[in-house]
Every structure is written in structure tokens, then in C-alpha cells.
Length: 38
Length: 251
Image (cartoon, rainbow over all chains, first blue to last red; front, side, top):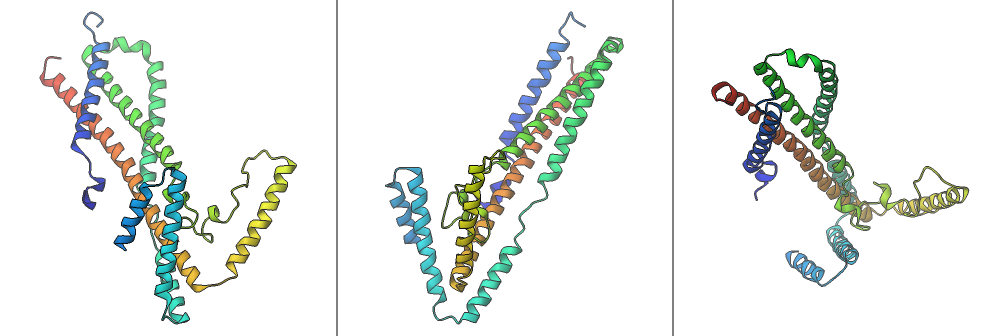
């Protein structure tokens, strides 16, 4: 690992974060707007 | 030098307990530092040594020990949490009127709400990380000889028996008084020796300690910033994806 890498932002962590955030969004939206509850 | 380090590493593997390992590193490195400074000091006049000490001291003093990133991030997190609390109060206030809003707009408001909830979770996480960093034990705290030098930090000068509890009996006060007197005697005893070589060792140890501390402070503050960026960017990109799906998709 070079010195330059020490504070680098990893793409995997970012993608993981996006996946978790999307999951939260979809879960909440599904719970809130379940067909039939509208 | 490399040979010494290799030896230190191999001999360290033969020691079992953590305490003994730390003590071993402490004594070995200290002895080696003594030798190196002694070698350095031979053939040098007292004036030269004095000038060298002053130079190291200046370097040490000019080390920057804060990054300036941490405080703004903590401020942003506090603000997000503060606004979030106000948002929750408003939501409760207008709860009954929610059904009057059209479904599509209600959906957008919900999405904004979820986004803000994610930001609040991130802010909480960053604040917890900050507190954990505040109670982090730096590696030089465990060393007696090569860790904190006695003129610069209380660890090396104040007796470990000193109690810091705010509730103390007369007996505890007396032991604190006793420790204070004894520690002061030891301190003055060391301080009046005025051995330039000894002071150079202390300066060098403290200088390196501060470099190490700087590394920890910078990396910790970078970690704080990175955590915030991961959370913030992830939540924002996810928000965009959800909104675009609603606009162009069939959600």
C-alpha cells in the first residue's frame, strides 16, 4: 500500500452504502404504500 | 540498525504475555536510543549539543497537531440531528393532515423523509465514531521509557497511585498530598540535573511521539470524513435512483 492509498475512498464501500440506502428506501416505500392501503 | 530491528522482532516472538512484550520493546529501544545519542554526542562541544537540542525543540513545537476537518464535520452532524428532531416534531403536528395530500406528493415527501432519516443515522454514527476516537489509547501510553517523557506529559511524572475520583475521603486526600510531594521531589531531582545529552533524548522521544500522535489524529479525522462521505454520497445516490425510478418507471 502506497502512502497515497491511506485516505482513499474505496468503491466497494461506496457501492455497499448505496445498496443499503436503496434497500432502506425500497423497504420503507413498500411498507408505506402497500397496495390497498393508499 | 536493520539487524537490531530483526533481532528485536524475533526475540519478541519468544515472549508470551502482552505486558512482557511491551516492557521488552520499552527497555530494548530505550537502551538503543541511549547508545545512539551517546555516539552522536561524542566529539561534540557542549555548545553544539545545546544548539542541536534547541533545533529539535523548535521542530517539535512547530508540528501541526490538528487537521481542521473534524470540527466542521461534527458541527454538520449536530445540525442534521437538531433539524431532524425539529422535523419529527413538525411531522407529529401535521400528522392528521397527511391524508389530504395527493398520493404522488405524499410519496415524494416520504422519500425526502427517508433520506433525512438516513442522514440522521449517518450523523449519529459519525458522532459515536468521534467519541470512540476521543477515548482511543495511543500506543505510546503503555511505554514507561520510550513513551511520554517526564517534562511533557503527566503520565511519566505523576504517580500511578493518584486517585482522580471526585469523591474522596480524608485518607485519599492524604495519599494524594503524599504522592504530590514525592512526585514533585522526583520531578525537581530530574529537572535540576540539566544534562544536555539526557535532554536531547527526551526531546527526540517527545518529537517522535508527537509525529506518531499526528498520524493518529490525521487518520482518525480522515476516517470521520470518509464515513460521512460514504453515508452522505450513498444516501444521495440512492435517493436519485429512487426518484428517477418513480419519474421514468412504473413504481
